Length: 115
Image (cartoon, rainbow, N blue to C red; front, top):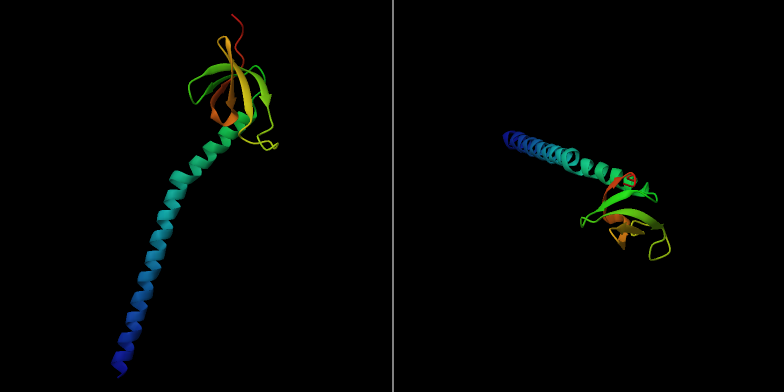
């Protein structure tokens, strides 16, 4: 009878060790994903948001669609009347004026001197 109690306790201990090792393994995998994928993407998004928020009149920009132009006007109010990433920016590209969303800007350069 005492042998079965000892065997039962040993089985419980083995099962708890397996569960603890499984939890540790999943925690390690999550940590790896966080530091390799999630954290760098968050840092990149924050730096892009700061870059786009620092736009000013006269800056040369490149949009996600490949348009290159100079900022003419920045409308800071969104559709609902609050400032947001859907702010509209008017740019001059060639002989045309185009309105783009602030979030679609990929690169910002300083104003180029007139040639």
